[in-house]
Image (cartoon, rainbow, N blue to C red; front, side, top):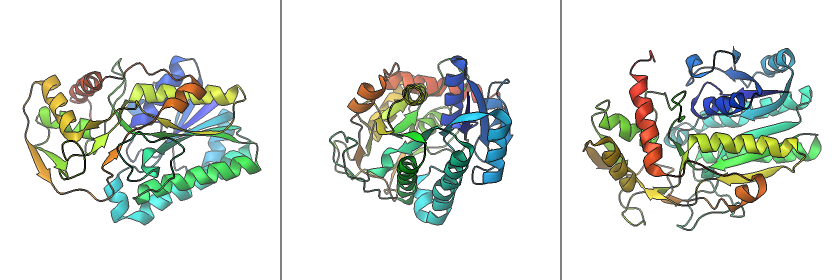
Length: 328
């Protein structure tokens, strides 16, 4: 069996590759390298540069490596950008996913793991949100991901293709062994940006909105260690291999930290009192979103090992320091 990991040279995809290789799995990566890096992959993992929206290309890769399963991470992920350029997101995240799903069906792939998002829920209350909550995304990014969930659900009903879509919350941190991390220089992830600011790589950190209906006026998010997330994807794959049913599951820790609280933790871990600026809200950002993750633990037996914000920040800090020696 060979697992095709799309977007496998990117942040989350590269951690999935590591998780699979650590378990002795055969892996091939497809990535157009728009935000991924070949050096993020183990040297024994083949990389095919190309577009998941090109069915002939993806079918050729599937034929070459005997692909039996797909873990799909390739996507655009910046919420404000999706608001400003929605058609880009519907093309990159929805249309290209449709092409990949079609190629998978034609090739006879039986199992499909999809990287979805908590953005499908929209602006929810402060209570942890369960999978039973109605979806009401407030951004084209969230809608583009939700449409892919719909396509997978309908395709699974019509063809022999089982799937799991993981709706995950705010991913952060880096591989504990220092093999991978968030490497995009202009990434918008809060913890990465805060750590870069502490290291003097950015002049200040912007805090987008301090008038939300939260405990300190800033947004509240459920921050998830990227290694725990990668392991959840492996658990999902094993569930399907064991004959488990298709599922849509949250992946988070079930508790939230505000932006201001995260800033305080980053300052404490780094020992740097860096500059912050309070600026207006960004379009498409809900006030609070925290996971109810009971179902993923029950269905997949997922057991997170890095549920600690200081550990997440420390891992991000080590990774940012290591990037200084890389040519990116």
